[in-house]
Picture 1 (tube, rainbow, N blue to C red):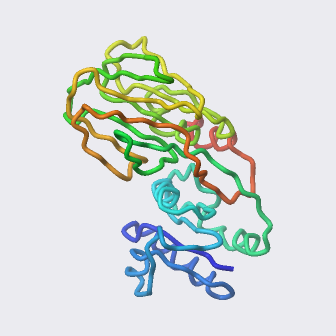
Picture 2 (tube, rainbow, N blue to C red; picture 1 turned 180 degrees about the horizontal axis):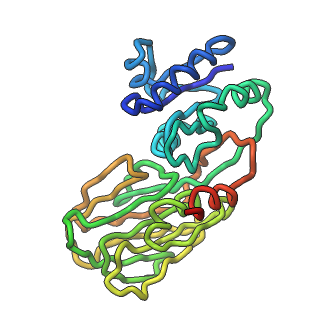
Length: 268
């Protein structure tokens, strides 16, 4: 079997875990190592977007898994090396048994909605969690307009707008008061960051709709995709977000979305 391995080599716990996992994988399988990780351990590597593994092992925290989902269409097995790891399926110290099961085909896959992001018709990166349009200057609110299906759904003065997938509903969107949405729902959640009028409430739209985020008065903003990529906006652009035709695919052994919420988000 051909495994891909990606990890952030600048995080010591992820680097240690990736080395150990690589040693285990190479006993019986082929391993493709992402370029940055390969350089850190003195091996030959490949750009993540060019790797074609049977399963991609993303070792680290949720940021590493989000990056893997942006750059690869491979099946992803998330391995938590010590952080919150809401998207991960296993911890690094228990991964060997899971890798054996993957090699035998003893697992299921789960498809997750990605968000397609375009700016003035130009397609950018797909997002697994969220696309955020926010002010480029501290303490300067912007006047945003949200359109769906050619109709204005909301005008709001706020620090920014978060457009999230159900996967992202337990991340930044939740932090600003957005709802937790089951990942089986094909929906797009739109929430405001620090709205001037607290009565503003989040919306959930069908993923088949095009959600447009515009500024009523052009002002410089930033578009941030999954916390990985930033684009400077003049404020005149039309940012459109809809469900992508590309689904992210995860290797799963459990159906424990609500247990994860209880363990990682609800307990004090």
